[in-house]
Each structure stands twice: as structure tokens, then as C-alpha cells.
Image (cartoon, rainbow, N blue to C red; front, side, top):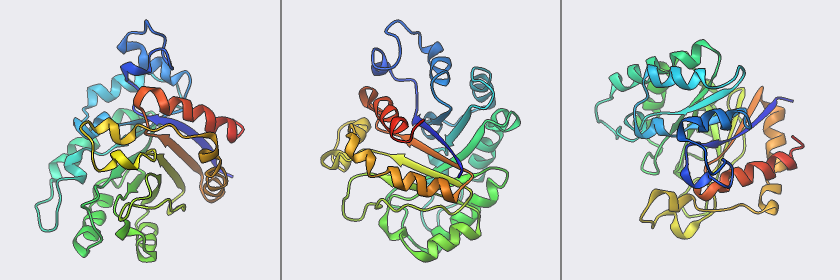
Length: 262
């Protein structure tokens, strides 16, 4: 049975004050506080802003030995490619170099490569996944699909063959959106809880509205046997809550930790 690590997607949120952080905490102290309570953090800012060596080195220094980061690939690596468009090789080189401080200290848990719903099952996109694997050859890589077209046995075999991890998701049960398929294609299990806010998934004014959702204990109980299944198949299973608005992710991590006996 592999180890289980539970954390959140991002940590620097003002509306977590009073829910998780002390009201008086300074932004510069949030990472140390977070790392004292969690063993794992999924970095979300790296999707919006290309990370750099100095920033990653600073984050590494402010976390204890054994702490792990899952780093989300920059949007130029996942959302810019379409069919026959030119591949941004420089983005991969820059991103890869930025992670060296985490890599050197054994704190790089994996790179999360999240593709948009528009990234559909095509030969060109399969070829692009091969390119991603080659460019990030030194690191564990987990792929998250949003489009249900990728629910195929051939895709599972492809991920296993290329040593790409599979990201299990819990998100609204909407037509065309990826369903809650559970399985592992590498020695790393990965689950992301996005919430079930179906009304706001496609129609929202602010991005956070999509993930504005608090899971009930009953809803998380549905996942308990699924998490155990992944743990039995992998060396390590990472569970991340992305329903970060108003500290809901922290509340749900506590629920799941209790359910899993942590």
C-alpha cells in the first residue's frame, strides 16, 4: 500500500484568513504556515506566470525536508498548442530549468499537465503528449484531461507506455466533461477535487466561481474506497483540493484526512 498525501491547489489566498490562517498573518509567512500543516502543495501560479529559478529556490528554502510540490505546467505548454500550430520548445526549457531547486532537494513531486476541454483526442494531440514526455523526461508527469473523448482503453495504454501519470478528477457531471474515472498509469496516483458546481462551470464571470463548492462528508465518503484502490496500485497517491474559494479546500482536506484515518 503506497503512501497518501493530501493538500490543496495553491495556498496564498486572502479569504483563508480566519478559516485556516491567522487573521494577522502576512502573505510572506503563508507558505511556512501551510507547510507546517500539509505535506503537499500544488502550485497553481505557475500556470499563469512562468516560474523562475529564484522563486522556486525561495519556496524550497521555506519548506521542511520531505515536503513535496506538484507544479502545474505553464499555459504556454498546455493551452497554446492546437493541431498543426508550432510547439513552444523554449517554454519547456524555461519551465524545466526553473524547477531545478525543487528537483535537487527531492521536493518535486510531479509536474501536472492540465489540458483544456478543447484539447481533443486526435493523432496530433497524441503526438504532442509524446513531445511533452520527452521534454520533461527527468520528472514525473501527470496528465489531466478535461474532454471526455480521452476516456478510452487506448489512452490508458498510451499513458502506461510513455510513463505518464493519469489525473483522476471529481467535477460536475456535465456532458462532454471528463467523468470520475479512477485508475493509475504510473507509480503515482493523482486526484483533483474541483467541486460539483455545474451551474457555474461553463458560465461564470470570475474563474474562482467554477470551483466555488464545499463537499459534504457523504460525497467524500464515495471516494474513500477509490483512494484506497489507488494506494494499492501505486507507490504514492496525491490528493489535491482545488475548491479553494473561502477556504473550502482546507475544510475538505480535514474531512478526507479523517475519513482516511490520517
